[in-house]
Image (cartoon, rainbow, N blue to C red):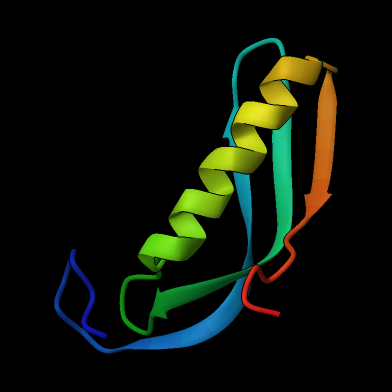
Length: 76
């Protein structure tokens, strides 16, 4: 996959996805990602992005000050 930002090659890695909602911080750990080898831009496949959206929506509903979630592969 090419980087959308600088068009360099990306490599598959696990990263942390952090969302700051002002009164709540959500951290999703071990997310399968594509990371640019040149600029460090992090990108997600469509299924991963959809799963992240579901995690954030669920954590917002719980509204604790800090939520830490381990990413679970939905294909497993």
